Length: 127
Image 1: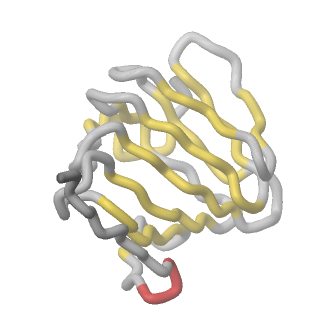
Image 2 (image 1 turned 45 degrees about the vertical axis):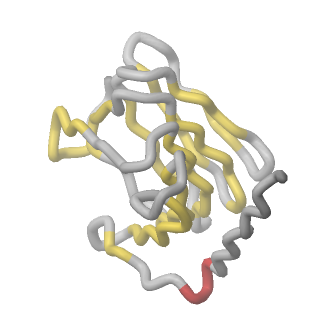
């Protein structure tokens, strides 16, 4: 007999936000709860930029609203708009930032059950 798994429903509006500095917040959807991936919605105000960092797994970022600029070490920056996604390879040093004067909202999917961030610089940086 085949097991009958139960789907998990998470409503982003009901998730308590975690501050990512003064210009960004993160709402975890899955991860550290038995799911094989860590995912969440990040909202970033104009002027927000991540520190230079990397993850030991693939990270995919899907733009929901606004415009994002992403830059991987040794590559020119790329602009992403609603409906665009970037898959960042494991161990790739990168930054991403809000581009323009609109709020950026994105869905982050980490190919890991826990979110692991290795910060290279605490200041916004260009790889």
